[in-house]
Image (cartoon, rainbow, N blue to C red):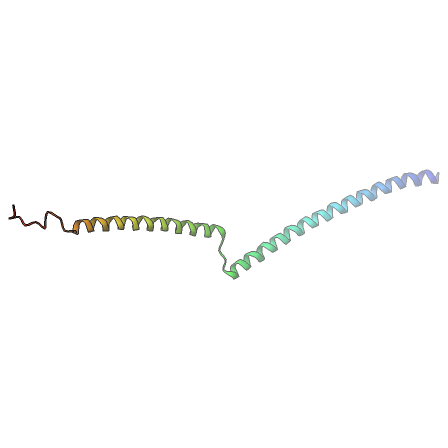
Length: 107
């Protein structure tokens, strides 16, 4: 009868061992997941601190500044074109007329 009771304990013992191992693996997984989250948070904080120390700009801010510069360049080009047109009109108005050089008393 000792053999019969040992066999049943042995099977239950193995099942208990596997349950314990599964529980430990699950616990280890939880710990690793928590560590990963903590490491990611620390890395993000360190990166942000380094960005501030180096006085770097965020991509969104750079994109916004580039858009403002693009619009300003377009406006400057449009204004330069307009000034050229106005200068040409002024030059045309100031140019002596051909009929103005002929005296009125000449037939």
